[in-house]
Length: 434
Image (tube, rainbow, N blue to C red):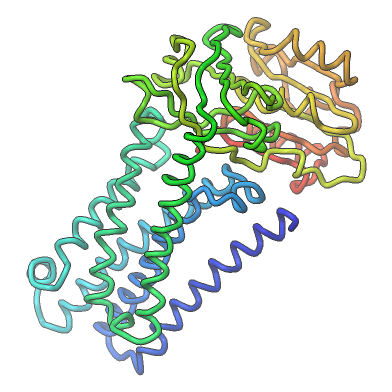
């Protein structure tokens, strides 16, 4: 199935489910009269949509192979982030409108109504805890806060979402009028328990079974440049992983410092039957510690994930531009060796010593005819990115582009490519800001 069809199908399925949820409220609401009814109705609608959105957002990050392969982990993460903002907004509006609507109906003040609902309505203490956890997770996921947190800290704080969803489930069934019985209640159970089953399989059991099968361990750690190392992993039956150039794994190194986090790292060379190579830049405590790994260190790996592969090519013989900066060049290095047709790789770096894989890429260029360019210097020296690329890559508008690098660089590159005439559908972007 074409990736675009999978993406459209997934979004259509989510939208259809949301319409079904709205239909539940419509069928259960014979009339709306007065401010209290309008506020309470708004609270019920937003509560239902929030209850539906929570498991959907978890499914987006459940690492379902079809979605990971055809939609891509970076796009799924963006959908999850956008949806998370809507979920926080829905929960906030739900809480405020329900309390206000009930206060008008009962003739109480807002504070008195809040105390009454929290301490006397069924399962409301759990719902309150779920709301606080969800709002707290939303706060640490905001862009300004996220930049101040290490990946590991953000990851563990984000796990509170699972607890919030579990705590909120009983509240939905006990106080949600639309879920009191019948088909709606019957559908809510498989939605939540089905999501739990999918998460248990793809996030826990499947990785455990693969770990037992492949027995990955560190074979070598090799310095590549300032703050950059390549980690070579070896194991059994690696060909059965069916990894593709451009994909990534979530790696958990079994050491006292690293064993509690699984971080995403891209393959920096085409997968080999006897080893996998990942190249990592010192961007935090986890990545910095990889330089000190000893050979023989056990590794748990989830993957391969990602749709940043040759599958994204539209065909038709269009030339391909691989555009990367910083550690974003790692998946492009693997793609440069394997993509068919006319391939150009442009690596953006401030200094010559920051360029990665110079000798390897020269060998690939000689062997496969790949054109390799280095775009060096600060912004003042390079000038406008689109103009610089136009000088290096004749016929830029006809190219299909694989783009990977830091968020600011990627956003600038997308603008430059679009201004140069490259169609949006031909810009394939792998994000490191997940």
